[in-house]
Length: 249
Image 1 (spheres, rainbow, N blue to C red):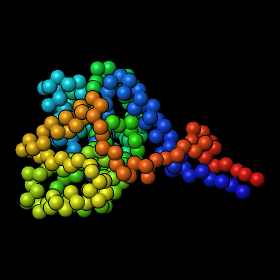
Image 2: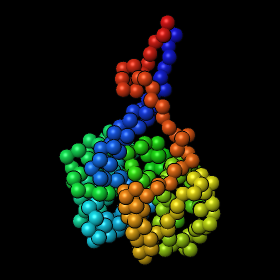
Image 3: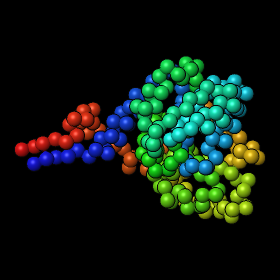
Image 4: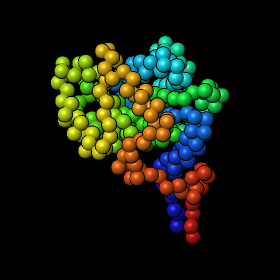
């Protein structure tokens, strides 16, 4: 008789173990990580460029790592802020993983960095399941994506510490119903803060930076109800890929 260990659970459990170590290492050096998740085209890069620029003006040591399947376009844009930026090309992988992130940070991340922003691959499915050792997980949604986005992607929104609405300057033009969006977020993730922004108008400038600095300094971070539902108990075989399939007589 064969007992097959759930491969997906093993992979996620191994990632969680790597994320815990990464979180401890970065916290020991005084660095907080902000993990940004969104669909493609949400305005994530535009918002992050403004926040990095503001941080540099304030004299706050920040850095950013951006992930995409191809091109270095986002890294080029973010580098205009003057902050250290690294592009990660995933070669088709739809998300970052903690072990992968740790490898890219090793030898690159400046020692004095207080805030590290991770611009995850544009995707609200796979990245939602992978802890990157973040202090703050932020999910962004533009007004063009519809009020029911939180209901369609409950894991992404349900595990967020902060929700950011982008492109509010065109909210009226696209008929965005902010009250309905807020109600849907509250249904999925009760009590999570929602911040409205517009990179074009400057609305909400500094809000993300301020929340990240507060978390770095020990301010309480929202605890999503869904967190306990998405823990991944570590199988005994998680550190041994060869034992993912085990036999019993």
